[in-house]
Structures are given as C-alpha cells and as structure tokens.
Image (cartoon, rainbow, N blue to C red; front, side, top):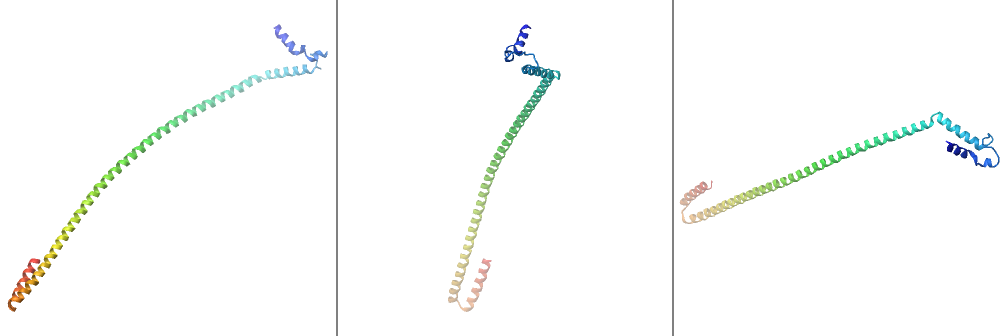
Length: 187
C-alpha cells in the first residue's frame, strides 16, 4: 500500500514544475491540480453511471451481432454449397441425358440410313424389273411389227404371184381365202 501511495504522490506532482516554482500542488490556483480533480470527477461520474459496464455491454452486443452475422454467413455459405452441389448434380444428369439423346439420335440415324439403303435397293430392283419388262414389251412389240410386216410383204408377194399365174376367177377365190386365213391368225 505504501508503494501505491508513493507512486500516487510522485504522479501528483512531487517533482512537478509547479513545485519547482514554489507553488503548492494541492491549491485551487494550480491548474494541474484542477485538471487532475476534473479528471478524477469525470472518471467517478463514468463509474457512477456505469459507463464501463454499458461500454462492455455495447461491446458484447456488438460481438454477439458480429457472431450472429458470422453464423448467418456460415449458414448461407453452407446453403450455397448445397445449392452448388445440387446444380452440379443436375448438370451431370442433364449432360448424361443429352449424351443419351445424342446416342439415340445416332442410332436412329444409322437405322434410317440402313432403311434408306434397303429402300433404295428395292427401288433400284423395281426400276430394273420395270426396265426389263419394258425391254421385253418392246421386244414383243418389235417382233409383232416384224411379223406383221413380213406377213404383209408375204401377202403382197403371194398376191402378185397368184395374180400372174391364175385366172381372174381363181384369183378372187384364192385372195379371199388368204385374207380370211390371215385375219384369223392375226386376231
């Protein structure tokens, strides 16, 4: 305790410039003493009105507010991470679905390609068969035309030969018989 009193006496101006000039420190005329008294009264008023407790409470409230903001930020961060994981999972699912759609489209394209080739082969076969039928029909038509012409030429030649060798009455009978026979064979 004596040390505290000694330290207080030292700090109160035992060796202050006011004492060196010959003034007494504990006088109301000494400004240092008045400032010291004002400071002590100020500290006492602060303690009386519990300002340190209020400051502590304000600091505690501020710390609690900061802590609640930190907790809220952590919760928001966790929620954001959960949402991010959810979106990444959805993105993977969508990517897998897109890959399946592309694979299915490729399979469908290959199937369509194979079907188109098969249809093309069938079409070519039908066209070849139609062309062969047209060729056969044209051959038959050409053969018929040649036969008809040959018959016409033979009939004309036979008429000329018969006309020269036969008489008029025989000619008429023979021509009529030949025309009837040709007519039956053609139709």
